[in-house]
Image 1 (cartoon, rainbow, N blue to C red):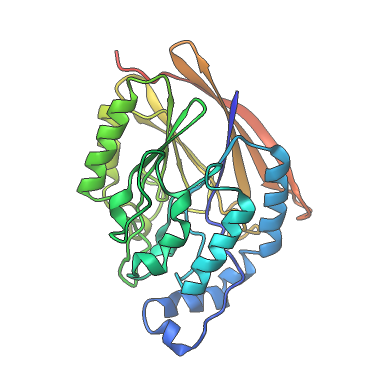
Image 2 (tube, one colour):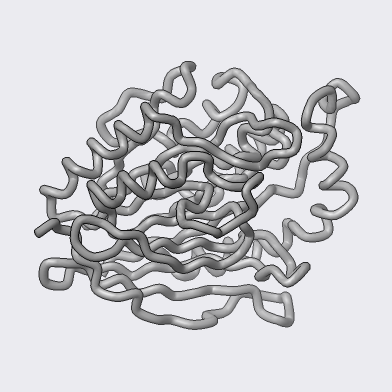
Length: 308
């Protein structure tokens, strides 16, 4: 049985602005939000507790679905690279970016390039300065085909939304269709939730319906997302059966405003006949706030990967 850990939205807390010029953009809103509210929610000590429990669980692979930074400062990308190194080596950890990791329009070399080793497919050259052209990427790990997509793009002041774009959707469909002929469980990593009504319109994925259409035609067994800081469980139609969609809350959050406290998900995946048996173990921050504990464990079902 192969184990895959999923965490998201750590929003690393140890960051500072170098001066007023850092805020001469949309960043000023993010900075004010952090100072007035979010810094009391996203706590470094909570994330440290999560990482300790995660490493104790010793998963075969770890997936991180974005929002490692807060307002995309250069120093945040450096700090995030150091945090990822603590989490694991690039062959053991796969990352896709979130909207906070593309808060404003930045050169690739000064931003996400710091994480390129975690966002590069097995057979691909290192990510290019072009930015988004490397998505989707494909990694084969044990019985899994891990496909990473990017919904991260600079958005207007009042938006926390995301977009895949026609080119990425076309490449994603071709990738998933080709993988359908292999005995692999296809796992898609995406930051924004692709299911309907998961979040407010201004925070949503602009081309979510186009993504769902790709899944209806090509299929994927498991789709993992973050973004909402809430737990989600949904299903999307695919050529045979339904894909399972699972969202995880923020990895660093204290309980707040009715949202879930920090969690990570541990998936146990094995082949079952023509499909895949997927079991989900929820590891959550204890009410005592001094560690993580197993909250529940249940079977998501056998998921059939093949079209009739």
